[in-house]
Length: 297
Image (cartoon, rainbow, N blue to C red; front, side, top):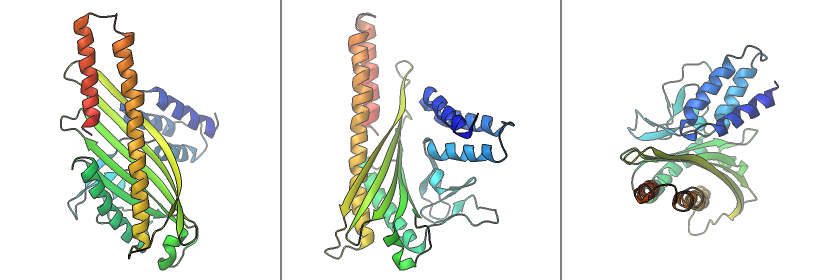
């Protein structure tokens, strides 16, 4: 089986398995790939890395030892088994390899700090003061440029949000990967790929669960308004914040329409004549609990 066939088969298998166990399923598939003795040398490692970077899994929360703040772990701030904190710019646990782990350039690091502060305020407003957020940036220029001009060559990054309900019945993970492509000095093109992983469990009135993920893309050319003392970094943050706000709103509405409206139709129309009145009321109660779980995120 060729490399592409193995890659496609792995993704197809993941799509058919229970989405709430996506992390375990991905690890199991990667273990099978690593144990495949018929593949060419190095192919198993490359395939594993490609799968880990292309499949979205629920985010993990870690605590920065230097700042004491929580940060989110994903493939974009990972080096081996270590993850970089956006607050201290340090990897935990400390990277012990001879090769230096990746860091953003100095000017991108300053923008990264501003972005984390800005989106932490966004999280506080839109997630009712709960959850965690993290922003990671990296350079996209193929050749090294002067530090002062690095933003003019474009950059990329990821904005992460995670929230869980107090009773652990609802989990929401947002992953927004973006690329900024300058178009002259007054405008830029923003390419945004947003993925939301939703997991709702109703354990109080029977074993009803709803899990899945949704991915949408937005590409938009925006004007860089530098009036009133607004600098280039702030202009990029304003445009990115507007796009991410729009994308999250669209995805949330789609989740409401695709998952909950369909669930309501199944329970109240297709199953209406199957059980007695008490069963119908119980089904309706389960659906209401799941909707409340989404509203609580």
